[in-house]
Image (cartoon, rainbow, N blue to C red; front, side, top):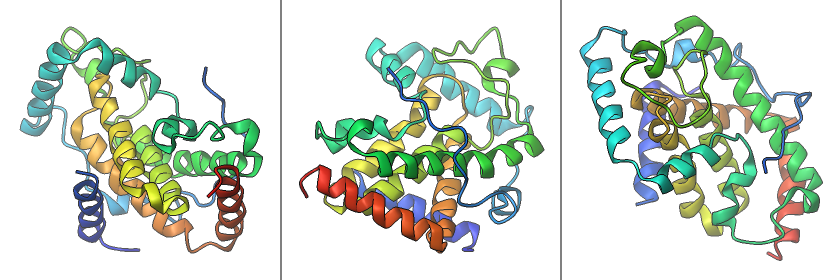
Length: 236
């Protein structure tokens, strides 16, 4: 696995390059787990609750809280759903729907399960207090609340992982897909449920997971079938 600095450089490269919900199958089998991708080895620990960094990030959240528009709030609320169909606006094709893409849908159910399998154990180790729990009188989220550990952001990890995989399938739209994946993660800050450093760690985590599972034979086989189905349905 690559070093933390290399993964962070890759995440920055991606960001520079981009200038009714469907429930996932909860029985989907992850492509990997926290034993193979141990985020507690890959990532630095989160800032302490009483650190200058956390206080700075709370200040950022308070600024966003008074400047976010109703449209930004609605976008963050919609992105609270963890599903590949949140990329429909950039794929921009009416055939991009679960009823048209059974293999693709099942494949991304496994992608979502993979993100959870890797991130949840790390959250349990670090148990970073979420902003609205640390400062309940100040931080007022506009998305569904959670008491799980804040670091790294699971939604951001999932969004980054989905973006990397989907952009491989649709290289014609790589910039738009990666930009959408970056927005998906940042909307957790807009929504008031995560610190910016949670998002940064989630992006690194998503890329690390992608790099790992791309070496697995079962991933490669299901990816090929899902990609072929997707491109055929979209007429590409």
